[in-house]
Amino acid sequence: MNFKSQLDEVEVFSKVAQAAKNLRLETYVVGGFVRDLVLGRPCKDIDFTCVGSGIKLAEEVAKQFDYHVPLSVFKNFGTAMLKVEEYELEFVGARKESYRLESRKPIVEDGTLQEDLERRDFTINAMAISLNEENFGDLIDPFRGLADIKKKIIRTPLDASITFSDDPLRMLRAVRFASQLDFDIEPDTFFALADNASRLEIISSERIIVELNKIILVKKPSYGFKLLFAGKLLQEFFPEMVALQGVDSVDDKSHKDNFYHTLQVLDNVCQVSNDLYLRWAAILHDIAKPATKRFNTKVGWTFHGHEDKGARMVPEIFRRLKLPMDERMKYVQKLVRLHLRPIALIKDEVTDSALRRLLFDAGDAIDDLMKLCRADVTSKNNKKVKRYLENFDKVDEKLLEVEEKDQMRNFQPPISGEEVMQVFNLEPSKIVGEIKEEIKEAILEGRIHNNPIEARELMIKIAKKKGLTPVNNP
Ligand code: CTP
Image (cartoon, rainbow, N blue to C red; front, side):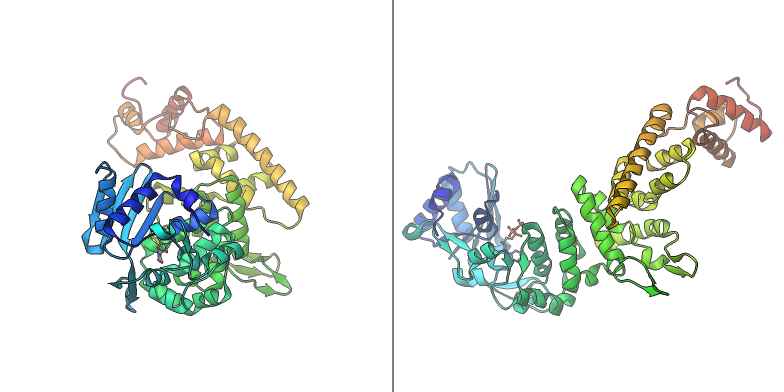
């Protein structure tokens, strides 16, 4: 197979080929770019391997561009990068690598193209395209990566246990590529996952989360999670999610498997949103079900309080997985805590005050909360699903009405603490907070409207009951 015509479309390749010729260096395009070219996916990162010095080659390429392209040299790693328009080019000499058991940092020695390719992770990433005059554009594919792309399989070029124990992060990459490309993992490669899973311990959480987030961001992430679970990888870094799996039965009463339910909710959310943290909220919405599970002879299985306990588990999970400990974590926590509230609004005769409270508590997350709740309807009974979703439509309508009337979504107290202190000549103290809280409650309950005039009137009344009199006429 030859890719000359595709390479001719991008100026970079002729320049690199010219530089390689000037230096008499055997040079190839390798790795992800070749894979993506075969798959017809656009790719702006291009890796070049030469049999010799990658740094010298990069310098010669820069010369071909009259040095109008920024060059960065990393002497310690023997690599160099060039930025040419939207492309990032990386140059490195062909290497053979061997790994020590306790680290993923390899011992590197110069090698041939074949040695360079065989140390790579998967056959689909172990193809090269020649930039040499005698066979420019030829695909070099010693491990039959092209056939694997056609068969849609992920397979390691060497024995999978060697490839994975060399660099355990590759086990997550296997699942990630399978998820992104919708490929199968070839059986020997797959069985090696479970055999080497414990080796993930030498991989930092920062690297694990990069791969996990990529798996979560695909169109249908349940597939990746099932692979992570079946390959015993999830057990290594996310035991809380593994604990969701399984069904208990007492007196012929069983509950649903919360692992597969969670995956269904996640896939549902992915159909309506690309937001990584809404997806995380779906993953974590029932995370406390195992911890709150009880059996009651009258009502069967219950998970009382799992939404609150789940919200309390979020910071520890975020901290351990090295997810951001900022407003994104708080947003996920909020969705987990509130995920049952809209359902309650369906069941009860809904009062405006319940709607106002939900708008107040959810704030800007209300739309995502409704998406999560809809996604949470996973019954196999289509009629039931339809009925639930229609009920949520009604909740949406009511929320909209109340929102228009009362602007509760980003509730700002109509009276500030400063004002309370000024009117009654108070120092900052508990009583100021109590007055503000009572005003907020009155607004949420609908006893007064959300405006400063009614709020001031009420403030005077509340204060009077507490034995306070205004020093200034408000
Ligand atoms: N590689 C590897 N083992 C790793 C990481 C990378 O063997 N743990 C090799 C693969 O041949 C890969 C190439 O290095 O194709 C480039 O790696 P990287 O840029 O991380 O991945 P890509 O394959 O380009 O894919 P993506 O950009 O989607 O991460």
